[in-house]
Image (cartoon, rainbow, N blue to C red; front, side):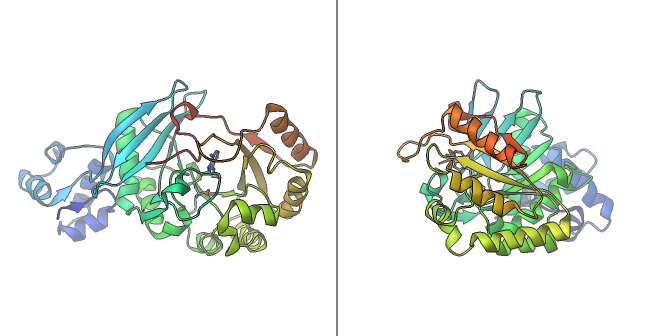
Length: 334
Ligand code: SAH
């Protein structure tokens, strides 16, 4: 079977082929991360080396199977992996034209959040580091370079942390895409061991927690992962994470109309954020057929926001990007 190259670092390329000098590895790494699709285009390598690479390796193991463009400018990509599995990734464009790529880290997801469409796929498998990097290379070739990466697509990133860490190292490498760690964000449903590991071993990227609600009973009902990752343990892990990294954490709250907008949810949220440095990001629920929720009314959103602000919490609201093509948060499904 041919070898996947997209997540090999220069020194790993040198060892793999063996190339002797590091600059050879640097050259190949640079070509791979520039999005080149053909070994013969690696013009500063000898013909013989190009041929050897072509015979034994693949620049891309995945391919764009289809794409859907939303009138708001975002594009959802359906990507076929080498085993025929499908994942989705999204290129988001904000009002100022800045691009963000939303990456998947797993095929399907095991977390079972009741409001999320990906949950209905169940967990199929983890993505390899090269499958994570290839999403960026494929999407940028189609849609142009993006300045930000968010690990908020399909899957629970902290349950594939080793592979994600490797992908982050590659994406951040100065000879490649050189995306600064502060331009990458990982979103988790709250895997305590993973938050602890991230605090000590990295990657040093931004962290977002899908809190949804800080009211324990409702959260346990909406997010079954709460059973083995209680809110109090998540909170302690965030405190330790902030102690080590000094970074502000984003709390994402998917607003489910009439469900998690109660006064209780607000009160518990105030208790949850004590001693933490946070910003709250509100995401009005994006409709998923067959799920028994509704989008919150405008008044409900504004009222929720106002009550958080009154308690001194900084709040932002996520624009509904990609909603027209089922590419918005929690609508990814293959
Ligand atoms: N597993 C990770 C990352 C994927 S979900 C996590 O849970 O954070 C990315 C975000 O989309 C999460 O904040 C999740 O709560 C939210 N989400 C899921 N389904 C949604 C829906 N139907 N509408 C809006 N947001 C949703």
